[in-house]
Length: 302
Image (cartoon, rainbow, N blue to C red; front, top):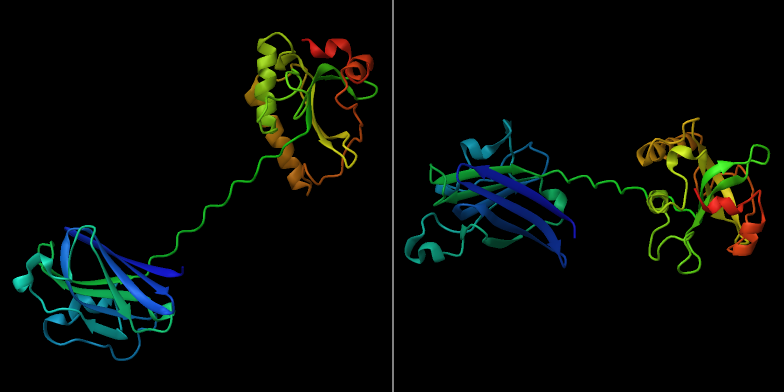
């Protein structure tokens, strides 16, 4: 629902005015956030401050401070009296007397929200030292929407280990995958999103259990996506220096740097040209163990 918000803060008093359209009619909700006041009249106008200004006579006028906003003269297009000053016999039960948390809803004679860029309230019996206000408020700017954090890339398979010098295929390492048979150490725990951070966290548990090589002993990490036929294809890889990766933070930093470089080159993990079309065997234990250049027996142990 489109709306505009106006706020006013004085010593001992603050309020919020929300102007909005509802079923073709326009309303203003005046809510006291702190203190109390008797709302005797409201004034409002658009962003054009030229021409004569509407005014109410006597104690409901907005002369002086009620005719300026941030030092600039305000031209009021409409003014509406709501009540006479003074609580009278009704006391604090008076309809226009608002205390903290109270809201007064009034209908506005306008055809568009564009007709209101500044809102004024003439109030008495206020909790300010003066006991009355001529409040003038400009429209609160809309808070910019926080940009959505980009979704992390996910991978069907990730390899940690060494690479064969001639073929470049993973050799003496550990392949982890997003889906597979339950209980398989090479499959992420059920319900785990297959982001690299999650693959890495799981790989570190395998290192702790003595099932995989520590990060400072691996040559690099390769990332795979499934092609149209369901075969994993290498999308890109990260290679370490001679000393491997000092820890997970260094590896994650290298991963972020690789993604940034691809983005700078107009590539993405999901849509980039695959730098190596390697069809790895699907989840077949015997085939994995029987093909030395792809995943030898010792690829499952550090």
